[in-house]
Image (cartoon, rainbow, N blue to C red; front, side, top):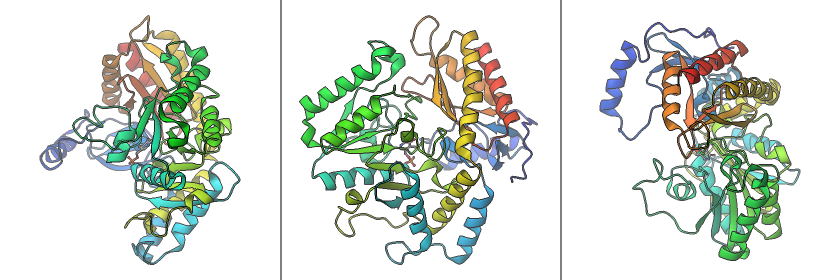
Length: 443
Ligand SMILES: *Cc1c(COP(=O)(O)O)cnc(C)c1O
């Protein structure tokens, strides 16, 4: 259990004087290209609270972007990491293997959807997992084309920049991008031209038509999609879209890759979001929530696909670090033993009830959407669906000044996304939602 008192407490403005001093050093020493969601310097964190150097306690509604699902410094993570650091810190799994890596792969093979024989590899980051998933799919199929979707986010390396939809800030000026990446329309109900009720079947028809007529199904190595889009604005595809894509992939020898980097590890109320409609991806990319805050990522999938790459074709110096693996085993045990999937569902109900009540009051809320502890509101100009990024900025600033950290998202910069740690105490969660309500009222 975290020893940090689970109460919101403001003793200075945000940022306080000590944070301001350190933020000056940040500006002097750190590249100006890095963003910052909240101007504060963290000293400790646990449960649903971030404590800054001035002694302010902020409610954490972001979990480090869906990373500390089990909370910061979760007991089992801390204990495992301490023991591992004392035993050894690195050998390189490709040089001299160790048990922790194998146990994480066993856990991923067991926990990901599908009862078929699975195998895994471990990497350092979500982007690296996506890169490897594409490498494996291309090697297995001997094909090159990769299908991705509007509003999708897959990372910031060269290949994953090409796969990511949004230019600013992720791609601007960073080209040339890798070829053979094809972006398809996304089933985005709120903004589907033919209306939300037709979105699933229309979108599926359009995407399949484009794959068949423009690419040729036999040239496609992989279809890569987030089961719920994260950075793109928590876009939940309508029922039928994902199973339809998966079916088309299977029928045409295409590897169906689920990017569960943000949706994985209990976030949506199931261990993986693909489970919601019984989709069984051929490969699954994981990262963020896998190791309680340590950098780790995985690719898990059908054994015949994972084994199809030539010997020594995959790897990396730090991938599956023993310390990150120890942390992952602690995080996974926490999710399972503390029933955090069920808890994510309960959190989701509390959040969506509150957000829907706000929607009834405030016409700038165009839509409330999400699943489990991954909920969002899309802000619009009242009366239509024109994006309202101005309101978003004002709401986030208000929440910060009241001691609540809230993250934004969305292609149009108009989505508030709520993804608290799954161990956040209920009173803190409700308090954060009340402050969000006031923030929207003043916007
Ligand atoms: C964050 C994210 C990535 C990239 O992960 P990094 O660890 O930042 O490289 C890829 N896909 C999705 C869906 C993500 O949310």
